[in-house]
Image 1 (cartoon, rainbow, N blue to C red):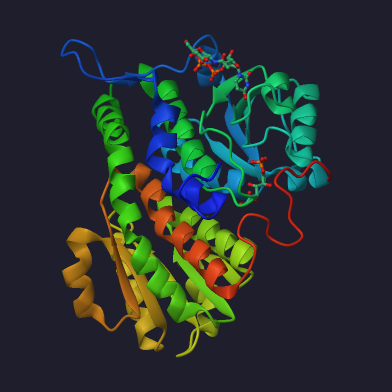
Image 2: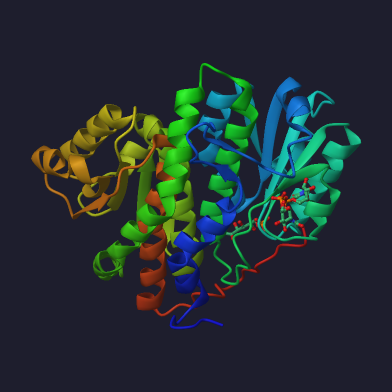
Length: 372
Ligand code: UD1
Ligand code: F6R
């Protein structure tokens, strides 16, 4: 049931304040002055000790689910102190990469049925690793076969392009990071501010959704373009990859997410006065580096669309001319990817409708990829 919306993708983008609320429901311990602010993940509480003792954590997924793990990696590393590596499921299988008994391996999947991810799970089980699921579908193959896990509880997702599952996956993995790190005193203040940030997150997502009309206007400007580059780094490298994936899969426009730190190692050659470039430059520890990227793109006359924190918008205007400046609410750094993907989801949606393509059933794609 699409309710007041025309498409499921549109509905699922707009219901993110609610889906994020259900992801966190009953899992945040917050309020009550004597109690520490922390998280409780029922499915993991008996396994946290084993996870903390593991030598390495490996997160495995495909497409958007891989991107969600990429978005959560910095906070997982920071709060756990355990090395975190990422694997695209098919690539791990192609290489038969090493997985050890001492590893904790997490499988990220909305459907819980993706063939490559499921095959990687069977492979990790054979190798004796502790296997954790981050899934949206209760009773799915991956939820059943993992030793333990977290249901992200985003509600069923019908549009082929994953939107609300992505933001709920990031939040679930951030809660996982908080749970693993919960025995550390030195990170307590950091963890408490993240819990506060999680509590406020649905209302911040509601705020960023107000950019809907602005993103529709931007889509009108970009309607006839051949290509769109998306630059991000740090917490928002994943936002660049995921934004580009949305644009290519539904709007059928070539789009590429680029790690801004790699700009000079090739992508800079593409920059000219015609190609539109979306730069994510919200306020975090990478901000000054990202400002210098913007200056260098300006120097090559790049057509820039800049996403920045509201507080930085004025100073951004001093740097140069832009096609658009997209102002987003500022949240805790590790939660910023949840905010920043929303305008890109809206852009992909509007581009698709304006270009006359099928939003909910992009050509050649299936919601659940059950073959290799
Ligand atoms: C569970 C209940 C929830 C109830 C809550 C009350 C289910 C599905 N969830 O939620 O309805 O409100 O207790 O305390 O009945 N698991 C995996 N792999 C996965 C995902 C989950 O093995 O990919 C396992 C978990 O380890 C756990 C079980 O499935 O044993 C349920 O997981 P989850 O729904 O995340 O647990 P709770 O949040 O505690
Ligand atoms: C993109 C998209 C796909 C899926 C991928 C994994 O919008 O939906 O890239 O993310 O096929 O699917 P799940 O998460 O079901 O394993």
